Length: 498
Ligand code: NAP
Ligand code: MG
Image (cartoon, rainbow, N blue to C red; front, side, top):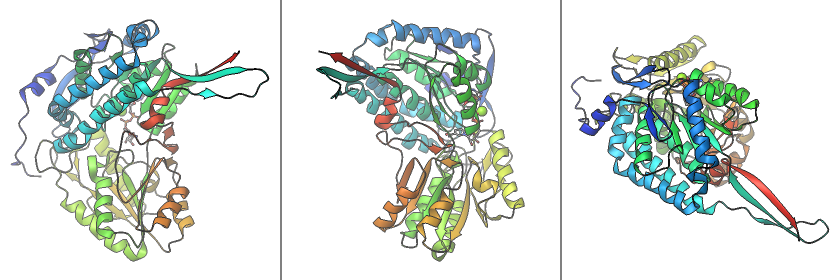
């Protein structure tokens, strides 16, 4: 990492926004926390203070939930036609597109990710998610049902919004996560109380400004910045919230299930992953190398479905590991604002320590460091893209989500699909799996055997139309796609004796 790298100039609108003040969005107004408390958010590229942010707690949660309840129970949102809701959500997408560059800068400063990634991944995806769900407003129908009870019947189902939704998001893709929660909720006719992660609140706050600018009625979206164990816990326990949707760690997911059990809140959870990347000997090896490297090093590995376990046939294993290790050492690590950067810092000192701890534990348990493993510099939270070999299924680095740029590479002996699937399935997670093969039959057979919410063959990325979520301890329910909006509805059956 050179100190002389040329950095993108921060637009004036961005520095002005970051300066603040940063308050809570409650009932269409920006207000200080009832306690007047604040916390700070930092730039992971150098640890410097970015801004002071209002710290919500239970008192603010009460106010935000009241506002969301009013907007839902008897407010304009529940009375608005689906077409009018669609228009507003589409308008938010347009506003986000107009300000896309500004958002990309804010995301890079707050989260650390390369500006280019924010521009070509986070922003376009967020905009498309809004447009995709805007389209669903007018298509959320029930069906007529033929029933066999004696008599003449008219029976049908209808989908109603579930009510007030409490959404809690993580720091790895803050804007994308915020949008993925609010777009389907709003499209279904719900109102929202949203808490972004304490590490990265800024793009969600800027989104709140756009939500007011484009004319959402007050109380429809409320934003509470603050901490999980105060604001987040108060949300999950609040009787005025009908559904909780959460993306983050499996441990916090478990806490949320317990909190929601009190009054049987609806719950959607997108939790951790340990995605296997399985390479068959017939694969296009160069593409598999590139795909495997991107899958684990993009966003510094801070992606729930990062391909963190590589399983390659012994005939191609060395070539793959060499290739991915070469890509790892070529990856340009640096500040997100530098044009040349391909991998930014991780989000925090805590995350850096956690990743370093995993690498050390892997080595202690017998893994070999093929490349990387170390911190880069002493300023900011930079870590080298890392490849471990000699890893065994029982090691912590193979079982647990590291959430960093660390790949565990393992080989298998024969192309026995059941055995490969058994090994690939042998973690508590089940979010994703990636296959590299040119053999259609192998691909289809493996897709059936894998316990994963998403199976990708020879590449692929997120798409708003493709449901996303996990088997096993990777979560409950699905986001995106039809299932993603249906998760914000209750299904009502109506039967009339004619
Ligand atoms: P986390 O604690 O699960 O944070 C996610 C969100 O949950 C944040 O908004 C957090 O608030 C909130 N939260 C924390 N405790 C809560 C509680 N008791 N009740 C309600 N909400 C609560 O994740 P993390 O500690 O930031 O990261 C730790 C690990 O989680 C990572 O290393 C990674 O393995 C995993 N993770 C997974 C994903 C994913 O996409 N699946 C995303 C992020 C992290 P605050 O942080 O603001 O206090
Ligand atoms: Mg946290």
